[in-house]
Image (cartoon, rainbow, N blue to C red; front, side, top):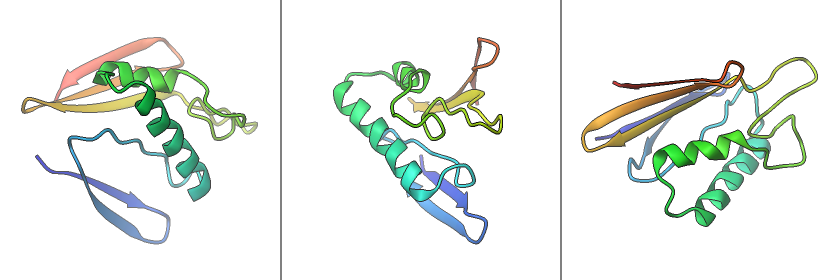
Length: 115
């Protein structure tokens, strides 16, 4: 299986091959500048170092906590203009199956489907 990241930064499209055997985190290019995205990435991989045995569902726990001092750029983001984290999406590829998980953060609901 091949996984690709396709991003647009308002100026240019970027295509990158992703290792399907490694966890990955994404931050919206339109919501976070490069420094904030890198900080969020560092939080994630630091968390992964401490939770090496974490299974995919457990990795979602990372998204349910605050990690920094700036709520404007945190994983559970909330900004003065009303913009905030409202959901968590997770894609897991395992044994030939691809599962999409979605958690509604505003109304505590969880959806999971093999795609």
